[in-house]
Length: 185
Ligand SMILES: CC(C)(COP(=O)(O)OP(=O)(O)OC[C@H]1O[C@@H](n2cnc3c(N)ncnc32)[C@H](O)[C@@H]1OP(=O)(O)O)[C@@H](O)C(=O)NCCC(=O)NCCS
Figure 1 (cartoon, rainbow, N blue to C red):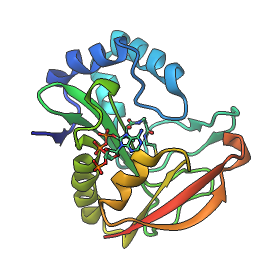
Figure 2 (cartoon, rainbow, N blue to C red; figure 1 turned 120 degrees about the vertical axis):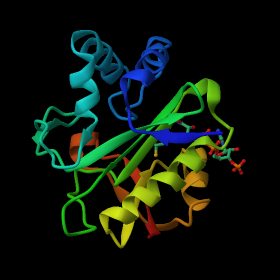
Figure 3 (tube, rainbow, N blue to C red; figure 1 turned 90 degrees about the vertical axis):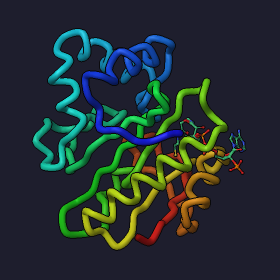
């Protein structure tokens, strides 16, 4: 069985082991994020866990891949869990609107550890996260995925998503083409 859990101390050893195996929960910053998280866990585990749950956007600004800094949106992260850390799924939003700034690539992002892919974990995690998004009160969520990521497209379509448009990511991300999907809540 797979579930999504609010990251807590009891999950941390398994999550840390996944990072140490070279997995990244961040699809944009990849190993840079892995290294940062391992350092943060070593420095102050409780503060690291607290930083993952930030519905009031109390954390500091976000640095985009080109170094630009932007304000943090409200958001929180859940870990995909089957008795071991299996992945990560995050949700962020703007208060009072389903719109996102153009530099934010979707409301929801996810990654499953490579050694547990293809078991339906991402599909189930997104289904569960949509339940949490409904509680926030948004009419829909947007998820973006690269044209060359059919596994992610399937995850979105299996959750009632539809393709809205092809677009070019902000220059801060390198301006490559991507796909925008929408899921009504
Ligand atoms: C995308 C990702 C999260 C999917 O996780 P997952 O747990 O393996 O997904 P699921 O098991 O729920 O499977 C999704 C579907 O994609 C299919 N799939 C998996 N890999 C595939 C591939 N390389 N090509 C085509 N389809 C693929 C699966 O068979 C499944 O289809 P099915 O339901 O018809 O059997 C995972 O591949 C991943 O972490 N990738 C790296 C990070 C990433 O790309 N995140 C998404 C950014 S938008």
